[in-house]
Image (cartoon, rainbow, N blue to C red; front, side, top):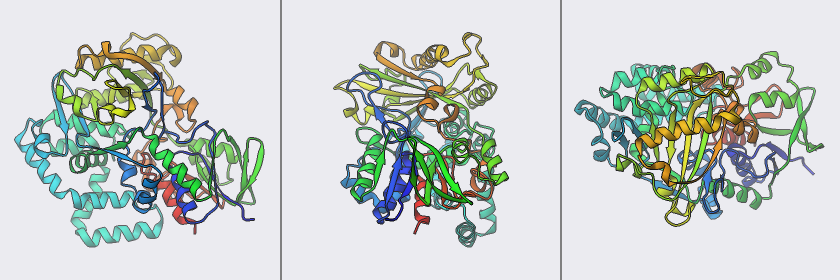
Length: 514
């Protein structure tokens, strides 16, 4: 009997790889150390019975538009995959009562802009979006291998010409602030778009971060957003069902403690103390854990690269059960899936610098998700869930930028930091606290304890700065996921094309297996 393809980790990339391989007749076994599959794409009753909270990922737009769904969407639908479309994807709350919001209605979006010149620029960007999105999306959908990459660059150069190709290259290297200041007049609009960079560790002045505000702004305007019907775990459940339908297995409480290899070739894994033979292994691991489980690959440059792989600052999660909608001072904010709270682009830059210095930020950036506004079945009738990311915070607390929190350990500090975040929401929504029925607080170290890939609470499993992205993710020369151990491939957010629910690395790896 042939040995199975072993996949370590039942996160979105591992499940996508397993589902694609199983659908092509391959024998697959997925091992997950946690009691349930999904990784960051799970939904649980974290506060009260009947209140279903997305534990990490809420936005499934990347998954809906992924290459995997393009190929397997019909079968996924048969296994229960369902999306809830959202026409108002995000807004930025600044001074209380003031906001900039992006919806799929262009006129509604432009009505929140203060500058006529910016309105004209926005229309120009939208007109150019299909072409530029094809270029940027094509890059993100290209494996970091020599021939696919050269073919992509050649195609773009033939299509755009030298000048426009160089223009795109310059844009890809720009910081959010540089691109936004060159493009828009209104500081409010610059703030609203720059916030998206913080989702992927791009503070306003970090080179290479302009792409994310651009894609989220234009993509949100053109297509809106989708979330999972009933919870983000609808994707996980459909993937597991698809794997099982084709004879694969997903085994939880299965702790892989060693990746066995001999003479530079993978031979299997040790799971709960027992050896499972395998000549092909896809490892959905943070680099430090790949290094730990292999004991080193004997390739000094690769092993050193894994050891020095840089993680982004941490995130704190606040999950709330509410007995009423958030009473926003700007009532329209209650109609958006995401509300970012942060008053200026400079505030975001300061918050990032504070977190890097080990300080609890005085005004953390908040990402407030309102899923039950669009998917009321996630909570009892008339009730709501609120999903709050506190970005960014340090894993190791060295101090408090505001001078109020004296604790240096997260177990004691998280309730105080949560109060700071809730104060910022209350400022935008007077009376908000009175709607809270229950809460669940998750510190960066809690995130890592539950999912070791989230090192220090880094929800994107590694900084996406230019020195650690594209051809350099996770290590130069290994950006296609292969490792010095034959048959062992790295997948997950630490591999190209990085974080998010698009599951690109899992799908790329599966496609390489014939």
